[in-house]
Structures are given as C-alpha cells and as structure tokens.
Image (tube, rainbow, N blue to C red; front, side):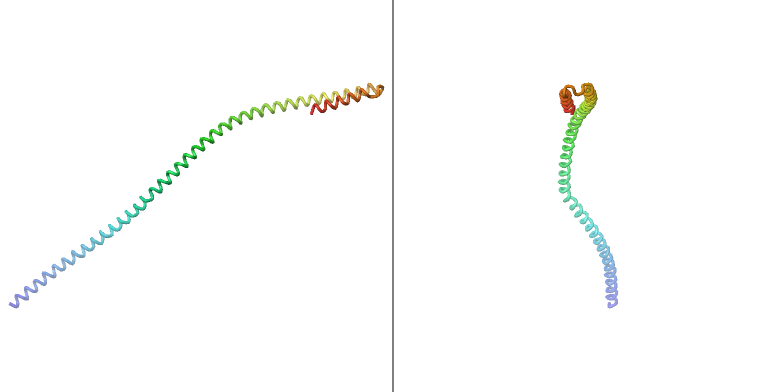
Length: 159
C-alpha cells in the first residue's frame, strides 16, 4: 500500500505541478495584459489631460477673438472715416487748384500790366526828358518840378 500512496502522492504532485505551471503561465499572461492595459489607460489619460488643457484654452481664445473682432470693427470705422475725409480733402484740393489757376492767371495779368506800366513809365520819362530839353529853363523850371512829382506818383502807383 505504501506503493499506492507513493503513486498517489507522485500523481498528485505531478497534477499540482502541471496546474501550477498552467496557473503560473496564465498569471504571467494576465500580468502582461494588465501591464499593456495600464499603459494604454495611462496614454489615454495623458491625451484626455492634454485635451482638457486645450479645452481650457478655448475661452481665452474666444476672448482674444472678440478683442480682435472689436479692433477690426474699430479699424474699419476708422478706414471709413478716413475715406470720407479723403474725399472731402479731394474736393477741397480741387477747389484750391481752381483758385491756384485763377491766382496764377491773375498774377500773369498783373505782371503783364506791370510790364505795360513800366513801358509807359519809361516812355513818360523819355517824354519828360525831351520836354526838359525843349523847354529849357526859361520859366525857372517850375513846370519841370511838377512833372517830377507826377513821375514819382506814377512810380509809386505802379508798385
């Protein structure tokens, strides 16, 4: 009987050894799966946290977009105002150019008149000189002095 107990003990030991190997293998496989799952979960947690930080940035970005939109609207209003002012200045520029043309023409007319007056003055001086030569000093030169005063008044008027 002792032999039967040894056989039973050996069979039971072998049976437990086989089960131990099977359970050990299954536990290693389960531990590997658990480790892989843990890595995947950790990676997904990091992605979720990264997404959460990005989601937290959204209100800030919305605020910045609103500020940019307000600035854009203000700049558009300024551009409209400047465009309107530019059109007004263009109208004023056209008026000033007309006035400049008129003033240029008037200046040319005045220069032409001045040239004519200068010519007349030169002719009058020559006439006075000729009269002085013709008249001489028989009357004491009183007439000639009157002519000098007229000549001086004509010179002052021409300027």
